Length: 122
Image 1 (tube, rainbow, N blue to C red):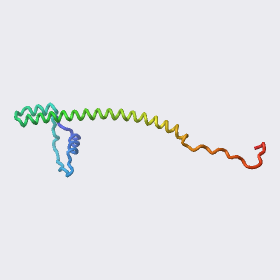
Image 2: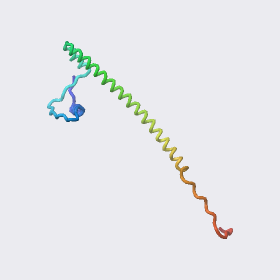
Image 3: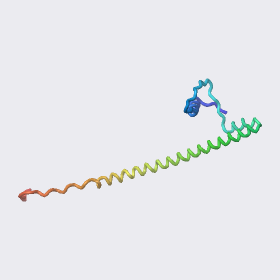
């Protein structure tokens, strides 16, 4: 069991706000939270069917949280890899566009033929 910091308490409070709004409580004392092992130890002190089912429920909840964190970590690694690839592609595409752009311009107009009497001095 450990005591939450003020920032953690505020983050927890902001995540628990409902659409209808919840009354703000003035907490004089910071709340405590259980680790996975602490929750299991607290649940095993009580020896009733309800306590046993709750301990199983808590452990399953912690397992799901751990899996979600692992999934998020894997997704973050994958997104960083994709971002790195896109940045290299962006650079390559920029080079290609710079080389193609002059080819897309209209051709220069050919010089006009002079009209009139032409001498060798011109």
